[in-house]
Length: 268
Image 1 (spheres, rainbow, N blue to C red):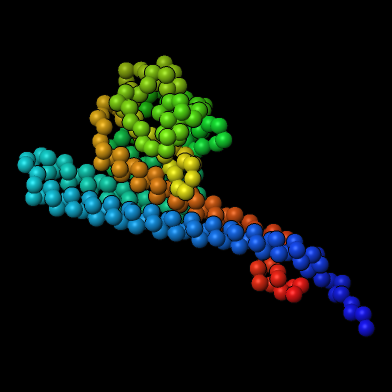
Image 2: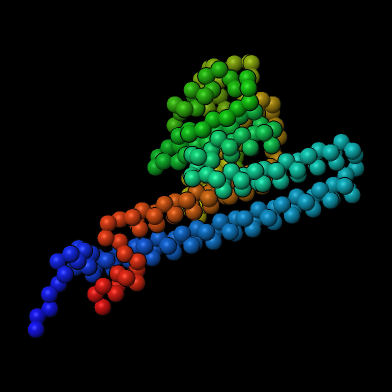
């Protein structure tokens, strides 16, 4: 007796290999999402270690700081760094992606680290482009925002490009004259004279760069470098996780997708 096939059977049921392929794709994306979540857990663990490190510095400063002014400065710095990580955790928990979190991230860094301006660049295939600018009132030179928005940074050129190419924080005591901001940015009033650029990087190459600008010449600070490196990693892990979640959701929404066990069961 010859069996009859249900005419309403979906196309994916008539093509078990296609269903199986989609099942493998979803399995791959689920694995990537699991790995991204694991990396983010490690990043949170590192942030916890950093908090404990700064808390030890707070205790040490109370015992060993020789002068009252030094003690106050160290306590203030440590508290500021702790506040940054607490604030970033809250911002990233509510953000759908990097662009959604950008404004809050830049303001948090600027306010708590004492910088007058901040810019977030996202990485394309060949260049960096600006997606968000923050600065304190009257702190940025005339034309600064327009210059940032029209500028494209090439890998290895300029401070953002160097931070992108070398995947590390890069410091400059003076804003380079060839930075691409034009003559208006070099005006005496409100001139930005210090800049620190650091990468946003998770599992792979940096997906963006954050630049911090100051109106006073500041000296290299290793503890600040360590703080922004951790901040860049924390944001990078967040970006990786959101990307993996999006890819998995898109795979599950494709026509004909079935859960991986059901895909095999349709033709066994």
